[in-house]
Length: 401
Ligand code: HSE
Image 1 (cartoon, protein in one colour):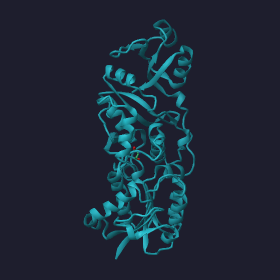
Image 2 (cartoon, helix red, strand yellow):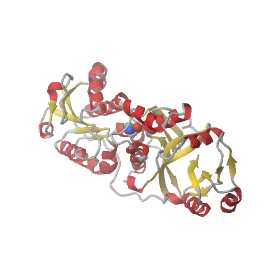
Image 3 (cartoon, protein in one colour):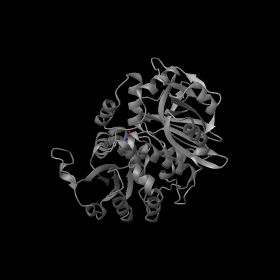
Image 4 (spheres, helix red, strand yellow):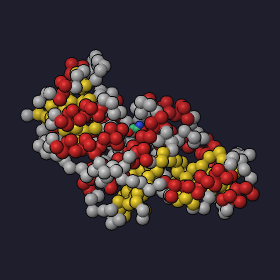
């Protein structure tokens, strides 16, 4: 016997999945207990000269109605038509593994329920952190804990960009293009640079931690589009690095989540996470701290996580692998109640700064004149917004971790 896999979407990740299945065929067969073969790919395009050239299908029914196919991999991205296709495959009794964080963030609980009803599994290890195992650890390993914090660098593209801007003084547009060429970036790069991708990923992680649905629309999200070389000079003057963090914390009133650039000190566990690497810091009430670190984007790392899901399904062909994630919505605590210190740049004078913000710490960046940079005491997000409005002339605000 052998296990036949169909791949929906033969782009960067989909072709990576086929490549991994072929390249590591023997190892995978040993781990799965059976040979796993890529039987067909669904794509509107043709792929002359490709190993799958003769195995391209254009009609999803040829997959859902093919009894030989037991596992489907979805790497199309987006929700249309991925959602309808995945649903149809699960309803046809096929296991599905996906790398699609948009799909998982928007429809995770429903697809898990459908999978369960049809005695198959819906797995999505590759949807967060590229090749880093984080979904399975949260579901199967860190089960003794109340997880009270998850903080991650969850987007490889922006981390690559910020690293190059910091170490090489690279230009924003040039370095974005580089990330695209390396196959890290989303089709629409605003998904990366505006923080939407990281937002969906922290929504997925938070949902898994609390077992309820966290709507990504509820998460306050800022990207890196407003980060300038001047900000990086200030960061360097402070001995800090600017990182796009996606974080969720449980306080006395419940969970709050936010995606935004933060200034990290060298002592922070995520400070040294550079380039396309991602890392996820987890704090549990009995575990203490744990960190997951590795390749966060790109063809083969992401395919590695997808194929690991395929192997897991191959080992559990006749059953549903349960994942606790109900469709009951979790109300997040308003991010405005969160307290932070904030780094602010302004053209206002010191008297005005101190009248509005009280005690602050000024920062002098090399070669920067005609403005003030300062760090506030710990205040709430809401308070900070009010004070910024009162001060006026604010050029930039970055949270200080
Ligand atoms: N565009 C994403 C990133 C791909 O840069 O992290 C991995 O999800």
